[in-house]
Amino acid sequence: ETGVTQSPTHLIKTRGQQVTLRCSSQSGHNTVSWYQQALGQGPQFIFQYYREEENGRGNFPPRFSGLQFPNYSSELNVNALELDDSALYLCASSGGLAGVGTGELFFGEGSRLTVL
Amino acid sequence: QKEVEQDPGPLSVPEGAIVSLNCTYSNSAFQYFMWYRQYSRKGPELLMYTYSSGNKEDGRFTAQVDKSSKYISLFIRDSQPSDSATYLCAMKDTNAGKSTFGDGTTLTVKP
Image (cartoon, rainbow over all chains, first blue to last red; front, side, top):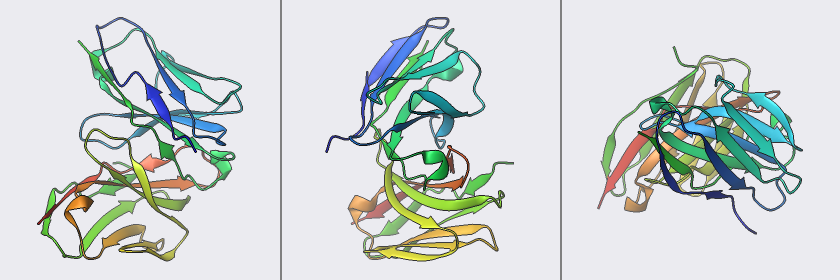
């Protein structure tokens, strides 16, 4: 059984640039959620995808967007990067529809983004 | 005020001690309660999951949920240095896709 994998693990961007982060979900999982974790804080929900459709969004501006592909992998895109976007971006997969499920999330190791 | 409040610590205990980690919450719609462990520079790992009120035990770990008080706890018995990590509580209601996390308690178990 393959776990959740994310790429890249680390990246540095400058303010105003765009970034794409990628996630492969755990085998058999069809729901992917993205979270932002700032230093010293808990993960904050960005959005969730189920069967290629967005299924809930947190309090993040539209410059945060995402995609889910037929194989359930996912991308997080952030446009017009700001200094406050520096954080660990976590992808989590779950089986079934997490919205009506238990909330058991299986996280990847994260992509650490630094915006200069 | 945050929906989920967690004692930030840090918490330092000797090996073998019993550790108590706690969270309070304000949203009465939360039905699922989770504890995650996060090692430095790693993603969170699910430790325990509980539905509604009650206790759940798994080895050295016990999770308790008191919905009437909006209070959850994680107890670690016979703590080990390998338990040193940040512990995150998380909660979810039945109809929402998102889990709401506390900010974590950092635990150090000294040999």
